[in-house]
Image (cartoon, rainbow, N blue to C red):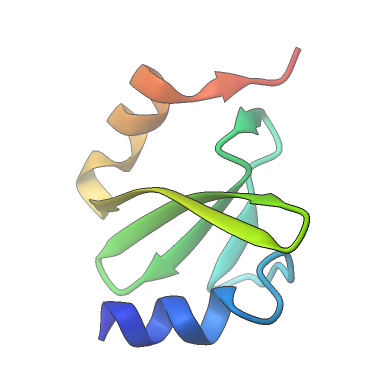
Length: 74
């Protein structure tokens, strides 16, 4: 299911934000986007036509991931 959702939401319009699925992380320069898939969070950057998936973590670990590896906007 996770693979299907990644394909569905990130293949054609990876930067199309929505309330429920894709969110642009305003305070973060890296990762740029978060995709919500059930109890998982997918963090990615979009560079041109490429989507770079940086991490797939359970919802409970999302904050810790951003604290440890996120780069805030300056």
